Image 1 (cartoon, rainbow, N blue to C red):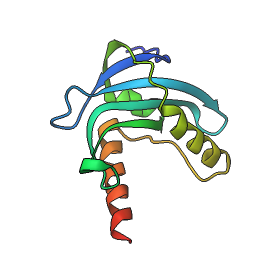
Image 2 (cartoon, rainbow, N blue to C red):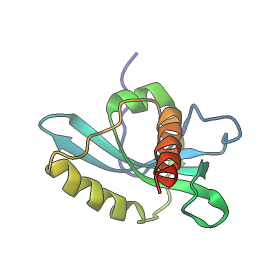
Image 3 (spheres, rainbow, N blue to C red):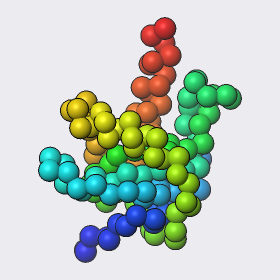
Length: 130
């Protein structure tokens, strides 16, 4: 089976968590890194991400995640058209880029639905530490 041609501006359906079937992955940017190869910068939209730091305790999107091709291959199901033109991913990208260049950040190589669960776990743990 040929590998899909992932491109900036695409919106994809993926293997979502229960109750998030309308969620989509938007490909925002692609970097080529010596250590990690292709790094895809995505937004995960229309989710119910538990986050005690936001009003109402629920976040509707993960604006930036740096992921591998393996993550996309394991998660994405079908091209769903063009992504929105929202630029809010750029803030997260800037933070990631600086941390990555300093050796303090990496990329996800787990499926998208597992990334969301991991982020919820990290956010919840950071609330308990106070």
